[in-house]
Length: 430
View 1: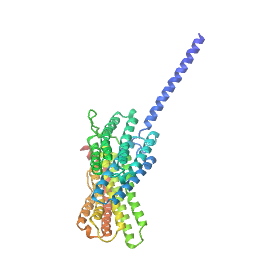
View 2: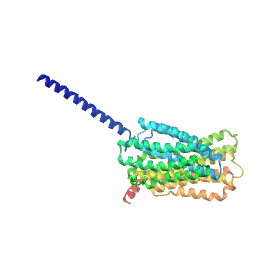
View 3: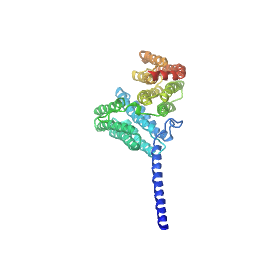
View 4: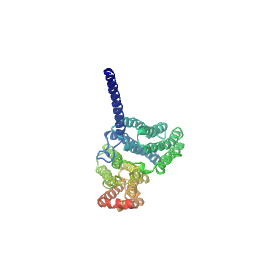
């Protein structure tokens, strides 16, 4: 009898140990799975990690490639190509920002994904100068693998997470596979056909979020499913604006370093720098501050992130790139006749930038600051006289306009942020 009791005791002990190990394993697995996702509503949840900043370095190179490629093909065709490739570069970056808004970049699986994406992004960026030449297929393949691979990996990571979010990324994957076919077909095609096929690919990708990534049988995704961490999204987009503005600083410094130090060149250098500072001031003291407040307190942050950050920031980035090209042209030829192409980029870059800021404020706060409107009108008034002025004088006037917008707009933003609680209540009631 004693032997039986002893045997039963050992069996019970073994079963208890097995149960404990199984339970510990399940708890450990759940802990690892939950760690893969970014936390919500805490002080640290909106923080940008070092791996994200490291990832952004690829896009510093990409923006540099964009502006230099346009300078080498400074024509209407070059402008169209610049617009198309800029849209592609922005799209891979902003889609990755959305993914990392849900996934935790401090975990190894997500960190490894970002490192692989960096390699693909570097191949894509290297291919930009000859994207419409012999490197077209490399650009298309890198872009497609970047988009499709990242989305498929996210679906795999979400296998134990939110079902709605996993279905959302399944819908996204369907649209990206469709557009990817056009990207790769364009990579094989001749230059003229390539532009058309890649244009179709971008149309497919850019309309898909507004359609909720609708697919047969799977339906569409409501914006409420895109429960983004607003602070993180706002900070990430702000950092990309810094990347683009950094290109202006690099162009200004590198070009000036090669020139003779004369009063004219020094004046052009100061004007270029002043314009970049004014653009920084307009966004970070007005647009970014307002956007951060509104998305952080919005009941539907997914809608704000989709409309305001995903789309309108493309205009901001494009405007800064065009302005960087204008700065290089100004430093190279500050005096003499201003041809139509040079005038177009000197006025067009800031114009695109102000337009992007206006649309952002309209979407986020349902208001367009008078400072933006006045600045945009002032640039339009300069158009008939642009070719009559020297590049230095025209750029100086544009810099003054941007500085005036920045100073006037700062006062408006302070008042708007003070009235934020009332505006949000009115928005909720509406």
